[in-house]
Length: 201
Length: 154
Image (cartoon, rainbow over all chains, first blue to last red; front, side, top):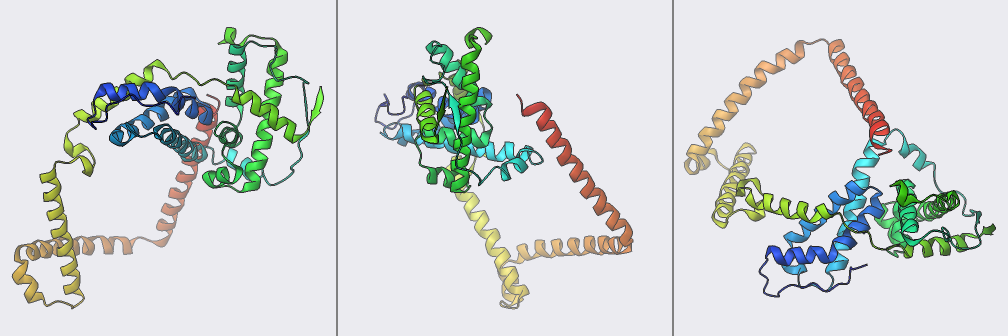
């Protein structure tokens, strides 16, 4: 991650396209990665990344010299991505997903899972592993992928994720647990298929 | 194969996810952002939010908005009997004229619409409401279907 990179800008406060371009190049991979993992969609992640940098441009005078610019960008990316999912997908899936999500909930804490003794996808090369994991994440439903990403990639605690998503703590735990199990199943299927994903793409 | 406890599964998944490298942003992103910035900068001030308006225009807008707010407030006070109408007339003669004109127009419109609405049978009103409700439900249903067919599996 490059969210802690120092920003190479002058401290005069004068904004030039060159300053901002350098700023964007330093952070665009981090912003895009955060968005694409939360959204599970490349095109939407690019839209959100654009929106994030337009917001950053509006307050570039502050951000250009701020040591916490990376954190600010990550927070804005996360919030915009979650807002996007809540605003659009929940509205459109009113008759379908929402009903299932409500019943998803508060039950069982125990999920037993059979897995290979070694690591997932250990027989694949790094590029194939990366591609399989990305594709597996994209296949998860939003209500499992988003808390999973917030927990494992952004290392947010359960209660903060629950507060951010506006759902109960037990639902967060259940969704993350089920997300892990679903992800593991997808990865196991992927690992045993012996296909090269890079060749498919 | 081994049975994994939730804790073991968490550790395995965490290891797999944390070793994922950062995704490269599309090459088009930089051009898109810079293009949008240029487009916004080229917009005239009246297409932008208040923050970007020129200072004289901001000042003028503030004065006008304050005047309108004061006028509405004083007129309300007059209606409630808190301020004498004569005082207001002296201060806001032209404004009161415009307000009176508006009052005459709105009364005429109300006088035209009210009998027309009152003359419609209740059955027609309920039928219209039912049609509106049905159309709304159909729109939601079509939207949900379109989402499932066209969008959800993209």
